[in-house]
Length: 250
Image (cartoon, rainbow, N blue to C red; front, side):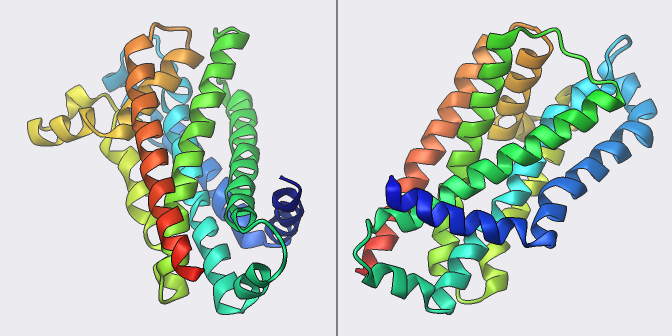
């Protein structure tokens, strides 16, 4: 843990000194939220029903988009360290080898949490209001943290295996696109049959519905369990694959 936190400090300094990272992880999702609420929000209200605030409806999807866009930098950081020789240098030192990967994951968790907090604060200014209690907020935060953890370990894989810096982050593009094919911005009932079937059975929809239900004080037990199953399954699978690939560097 000591070695992980030392390397985490190094990664966070790189994060704070990189304006493009902060813009991609925070400013762009905020811009998307402003666009959806103030440009498309009036038209969307006919789909989500009367009396439902659209900023409340679309916030979970924006949060997932922010997390998905931010995790690409996990792969880029790791790939850059490998290309510049820092990865080999760290592995040659008498430190816990697992700390090299865990420091990258921890950096992504913290930077993702910062993005989520900023977006929620902006949403409050835009009119977001929640009837959820403290436990529901903690449950929503925990689910988003678990989702970030799963994607962080997924990002480790291209970070270790990519042949170019472009290849290290392109894996995140489909992840950022998935919210558009879910119930993040419109109900799945408005979609064509084939697209609706896909949207209702992909992980983003379950996570969006779980977070939305928690923040709006609505029953969401079924969605929460499905979302947890997706996140845990992805995290365990990605972790196992990342560890297996990492051992090849031994």
